[in-house]
Image (cartoon, rainbow, N blue to C red):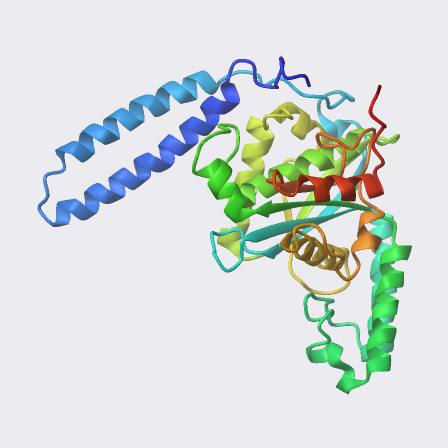
Length: 359
């Protein structure tokens, strides 16, 4: 989409975000009033502020109604994906780091593995074979960063030969499993300073997790829409608990309803199932691959995109890439990247060569 047609010409997406922020502010005012009332404090100013917030929230909600134009996702089928007989594609997502503000951990990464059900089943069989060979049982789950540090069961009693053989087996498992890599990493400190605190981009949420899921889903629908066979994406997360899962489900639903600056809600709904699936870290499934990749992505962005984590090349060779690799057409996104842009582009060119500049 050109700069003259940025995807929300009427500002409806901005209005929806404004309404959401005002709603949260209203809840805070009511909580403040409740606390002050217990002290006998005059709460008339709280009432005035609450009424004004509600008035502006109502206006923003009314303005947000209507259609947000799509950027570039192609149309397919009847508009009801469940009636189109599509093949289901699975996107396993795992996270590394924490999305909450933390000065000791300024990065957050989501790693995604897009895979067919047939390939996922084959992965489970191959992973079980490795577990049986090295541990004599299959009721364990591959988990980072324990594996790369050779900690706990991966220490193998200090047997460095067995450690190396296990690493090689995992490398072969990643190489031989057909999947597509998608990922997003948020540099939280830079994001807060450049965007969340300044409000310079009213389209962006202020929550690092929501930003990360938006950016990985934009790339996933680009991948789905670019395939020769009609696909419908099913998104699977590791379950973190009933409340956390419900919050993730709410944010996912909001994206599918409201869309983003670059992709409309109708486009998300066209290519994705309308609900998340959750699973626990148990048994052999591609969630283990997402765990490995999210750790690599976390370490890569922590090193200003100039380091090479454990299996980085293996995962990047399978990254989604299309056309020039720009604006959602490359599967790995770092945000923000203004101060490390050269390193990010060099990496992208390595796995998605960009066209030479025209003279």
